Length: 116
Length: 117
Image (cartoon, rainbow over all chains, first blue to last red; front, side, top):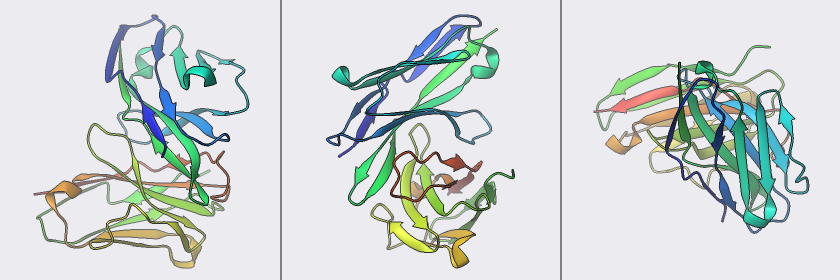
């Protein structure tokens, strides 16, 4: 069975601070994909990043970066120089085979509040 | 490119009443999903279609929930009769790739918020 744990329920930072959102996952599959989605107050989940299980290279995309470590089953997400518009709920998600099809499992989310 | 359209945005009903939600996915997206998001939790998959066929409905409470996707485009999700615990946001999503691809990026609609009194 697939499981995603986001231990941080809420995080509050001041604008321009860096913030890291933690994600730990469980799966028995060797091929899987990890995602981060953002859910602003409007309600629509927005795709941010995706990583497959064979690519542990960490990357930076603008103010976003991620740290994927298979040894600890973690896929952490960092926002550098946070802005008020980054305030949202952030979901980590795991896509792994559930039967004959991939199934996307979400964590419970982390509410990020960036204060001016 | 137009996004995933959902309606209604908000619905309030009494328990034991029925309700229906509608979703229009992105044009050309073969795969359509319905998720239930209870307050404070992550989205939970209810049902997944590829074209107009059901791929996965293992988490759909079939005694009260039903969904269809006619002609492989629009979809409706129905709840009858509704219970208090059905209060949630119902999210529709679509993706370009078939369900056999784990790399699928889902595009979500804004959701339909249901309150059952």
